[in-house]
Length: 205
Image 1 (cartoon, rainbow, N blue to C red):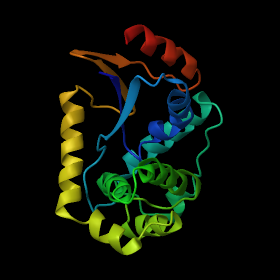
Image 2: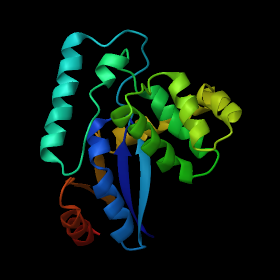
Image 3: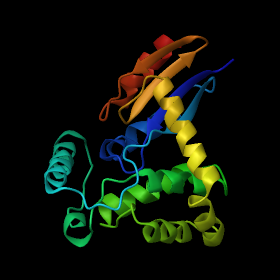
């Protein structure tokens, strides 16, 4: 039975965006008997309320800190001038589920596209119109996507993934957890030296 490396993330989590290069390194270098399973952790519930000013400042500070600590990561701070931020990521999470219904490759493709739209192009992935536009750019069937992202089934799938991540003891993102049989081990994530994570995973598997 292969070991499972759970990767728990949120497409609007700035630290998950910063982890992209390390995640790709893991995908390319882990042995075949370790399977990566992606889970949406759900960072912030749906809301139509504008983000409080204090939270806006905190998140912008996090962006600055990431740029200072993670190699080759940049943010477009025009987002805070051009958009009306809301502390709401569940719609973006449902977008990933709706996209993957049209092909599993779109799980990562949609996640990456949301991050690019949000962090580099100053678009708001809390807005449905932004996500439908991204779906079109990815070549998805926009009508099917629009129906799915708002469906009860997609919302239930998100709830199940959030529940499983909590059952695994994960409440922050990104998180990596290696499960081998009945044993489970949290893997420290490294944003600049992913080869060290490989060594830890192989030792634990």
